[in-house]
Amino acid sequence: MLEKIVGPDISHNDIKSFETALVGAGINKFGPLGSRFKKKDPIFVVRAPARLDCMGGIADYSGSLVCEMPLERAVVLGIQARDDRKVVIHSTGINDLGLSPDLSCSLDFLTPESKTNGYLTLKNTFSQQTETAWGAYVAGAFSVLQHEGFIDRFPHGATIVLAGDIPPRIGISSSAAVEIATMYGLSLLYGIKLNGIDMAILSHKVENQIVGAACGIMDQVTCALGEKGKLLSLLCQPHNILGQIVLPPGIHLIGINSGVKRQIKSSRYTNTRIGSFMGLTMIQNYLKTKNRFLSKGRLDYLCNISKSEYLSTYRPLLPVKISGREFQKLYTRDPDPATFIDPAVQYNVRSRVEHPIYEHQRALDFTDHIRKATIEKPEILEKAGRLMYASNWSYTYRCGLGCPQTDWIVSKIRKHGSKSGFYGAKITGGGSGGTVAVLGNDHMFDFISTILDDYKAVTGITAEIFTGSSPGALEFGYLVYRLT
Image 1 (cartoon, rainbow, N blue to C red):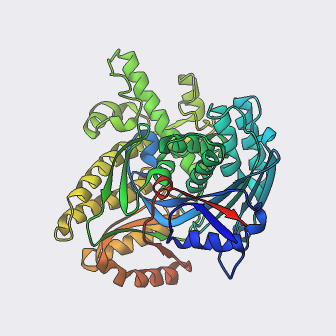
Image 2: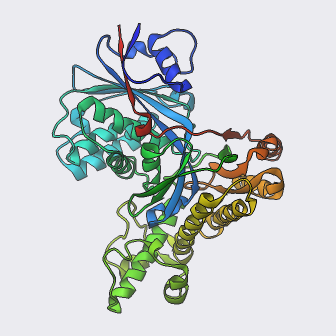
Image 3: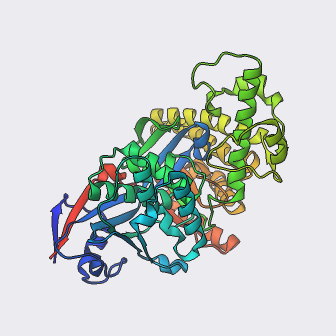
């Protein structure tokens, strides 16, 4: 039997499936899970959604405005105290990817005395164990919480079970959803007071320091603080929420999964990020040599440079390319704490600087159009759509993060145009495959299946659509169950 101790009636199918799995009744997508938990002790259950990157994307680490929407797809996590000092983790369905679904380790291993060496040791250990490398997203939270001073010492271990329906590596932040669900679950189990921004910052540190992915913070903030049916407007300096924008009636933002797997730890993404930080360092150094006065924080981010200022003052200073070795001779330190410069690599600089500066302005204009838009004013929505097409072009030609398959989808949608209900489309997140974000009205759903059929005929890949939105982790809240 399953007793609900805390929590409202929940209509989400994934929560219902998790409840069914706990009692082992009937057929459900998560399988039987009740045997993994002790009877009578509380089981905390949380939920964190995937996100759709509608504008901003990889410019988040350069201080851009980004526009993100929580999706219907989500991770559900159950967590319960143990009587020992072990952390035992089970992830349902991950064996379908050829990975081990189970991981067990000691709290002493996850929380060594040395913070710097501890993070590096965990990163190296998980990265070398291919079948359980996914565990870094979960187990890393213990290390970060203790080393960042949010808990002195974990008094006991935990049993953690993950379930959900977010496909990995397709650009809708399955990793951030796991991190936020874990951080929220740990805060409940151990009585750690965390607000949504705390959860996002700590989860982002897990991803950067222990997983080793040099992503920005927009994913974690959206998974934690996004609201159902709304577009989160976030200025990544470093995490200033400007508002939650309600889409006009009859207007939709959906995702099309291209079926091309992407990897945020890839050299294409990392080198693009490094190039942008190199450019920022060059600009900052130029201003210092000229004794230019800057207000505090004025040029901590590329996105604080306007397009006109960039073109008139800074563009001529930046090389098209520079080798890592040459950069390191000119500057005393690596400019980005999340990446390492390879002396042998030629890094693109000028184009990698231009993308975030232009993308920030596109994001500002995009949110302005969405706020003003109505179904009766398609010209405003078409303006927003053109900004999405421009962003997609910049991903490919300024950043080198395009993808033939996603470009095909974007091009097909653009050909259909507003007469078929489509206003705009763009590649999302880290690029190089993954998901395409699409802006349109109700009419577009009459043509989506045709586009997907044509896509399969051309590429041999079956694409899927992500529609609908759901609450961020904190808007959703939590539930507490007991097995009896």
